[in-house]
Length: 203
Image 1 (cartoon, rainbow, N blue to C red):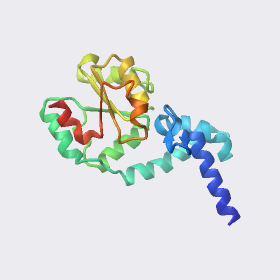
Image 2: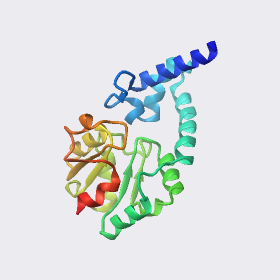
Image 3: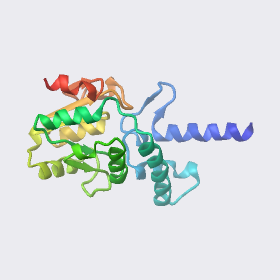
């Protein structure tokens, strides 16, 4: 019982340090677990985990998270149909994530939608991290688009701030992530429940 209680205390502490507010049951905007890189998470967890080498901890966490994300992805809609329809409109489609490139690529492969993407990058792809503009600039370079022709869709404040910083055409928030409408509305041009509503919004 003591071991079980101790484990629960550690989990609670890790969640709190990662940005989860137990009182509100919401994530703090910009918190490591909600929208940080694996290295951000390792830095805030190092003292609790007892592993002072944050890069070692980041590697171990990457392996754990990758197993959870890659092997059990849950799509909010039929992504093959949605992404196929977007491509049929002549749109270029990209994925920019604060996960690693490998995790993002393997997850899209697991969902069997990787061929729909013109561009995929992670925090480790060499284009910087959100909310800086490097990921957007590289997407524009690859697709030969201007930033004001790009719609950025995200579930966190850093996604939307990246859109603002890059002077993207639109910043669309989705409520299917870890942040509330209140966290997102001040940066968003529009808010939809999830990407299953994207085509209706485009229409």
